[in-house]
Every structure is written in C-alpha cells, then in structure tokens.
Length: 62
Image: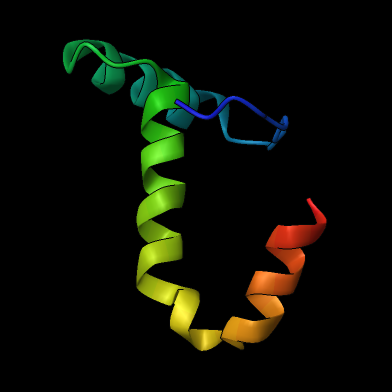
C-alpha cells in the first residue's frame, strides 16, 4: 500500500453507491480498495496517451 495518500472526493448516485458497496463487501473488499485498483488499471491502460517525459516530471514534483 502507498505510504503517501491523497483524498479523492466524488459524487455518485446514492443507489449506485449502495450497490457498489454491497458488491465490494460480497468480494470481501472495501470500496476504497476497489477504486484504487480501478485507478491503477486505468493508468496502466491509458498512460501511453500522455507524454512519458511529462508524466515523469509530474511524478518527480510530487
């Protein structure tokens, strides 16, 4: 798990939130674990769309 973290706040339809949390619980995962996994997968799939040098610079700044 990452040692440095940042908060991400989003708005979601209450019914979708309820269903999402129920599905996560059925898989013995928290909603945060699933969202982090989804973000990692999204980055892996789409990182090539941005300039790799720009990505490295932004990573070094944070």
